[in-house]
Length: 64
Image (cartoon, rainbow, N blue to C red):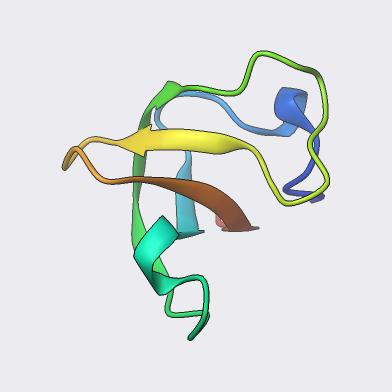
C-alpha cells in the first residue's frame, strides 16, 4: 500500500515511521497508529501520524 495516501492508514494500523530527527539517517520506528495528523488526502513525503507511544513521524511502511 502507498504510504502517501491518507485513506490507506487508519488508527490501529501497524506502521513504520521516520521521525523528524531521524530523517537524515532514515531510521524507522515501528508502532500502532493512534491519530492521523495530516489533513490532506495525500502527501509526497508520507502521511504524518502519532503512534500510541506518542511518537510523531511520517509513514514509510504500512504493515498488516
